[in-house]
Image (cartoon, rainbow, N blue to C red; front, side, top):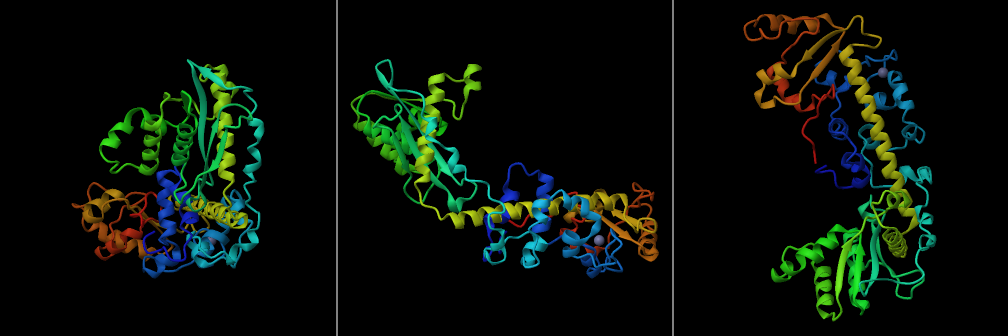
Length: 426
Ligand SMILES: [Zn+2]
């Protein structure tokens, strides 16, 4: 996305690309779409790789440009119908960068009508105090009072709206219970988890066992703290908080231990013996307190909703584009569509590209669909003139053809079949 910072809602645009669930193949398609490198018939024609720019997949005789491909072509109607969340809100007023390349602009102007269309529901209601329904008095183990801590982060998917909070739980309605929003600009779950332990270390004078579900905090306290102190906290992430925790622990007279408990567990985990009942209750209560703490941050609901809507819409539209491109690639390799009978195919295999263009050898697989005899015959003639060189690629039903030299300049755009993508613009 280099060079595309100004005016682009990067979070929304890159949500699908950055998602762990998006397969490498789909990411290849996405790179092609976002960089505007889809080889539509219109583009092929302009590059003089085919004689006309008419869509080969439907009967409309329309130019196959991005508008036709994504939103009009009847050949992909079935694909679109599976992506109604992209189609229903469609508007001509969407800027071209979004309609054609899936790039979401920063400006909200064209998207105000979305309203609450994609509202994910107010998850805040889900966190209720009822989670605090466990203990009427504090838990004491080996003479130490047990305190459960947790951190929580709201709007985690969007760095611009991330808001963290932390909680510490002694027992139901204990005056010591803590539920606070995390201060500062760095709103992360780790900082919240760490802050929860810090306040217990500072505010509980008795011997204490802190039960956290954060491996980060447990490892830090048990294994790293002393080493970090000796190194002068150089290069330590969240050094300010670790230092504060270290100070608090060294000022303590009573003992302080941390143990790790399983986070977000339920009765099923208890029955399976994966977590003790008291730990499940304590952790869930601490989680509820932390979430309430995070909710104390004031976030403009309208702004948040619009950002969520745009993120959702961008992903929905891009998902549909990928699906269309996949269907189109499959269709192209089978030479289906209304023109298929008179269509000849030239396919440039990865191997022949590798042989002819070692410097552009990877990730290229171009299929040209053509009605023109000349267009196929000329290259085929050229092909058979060099039998020795291409003996490993006999001409067959799907002839292998090597592109002329000058075409190598185009090779970065040869993502037409979507088998693989050109280098990502990041
Ligand atoms: Zn069409």
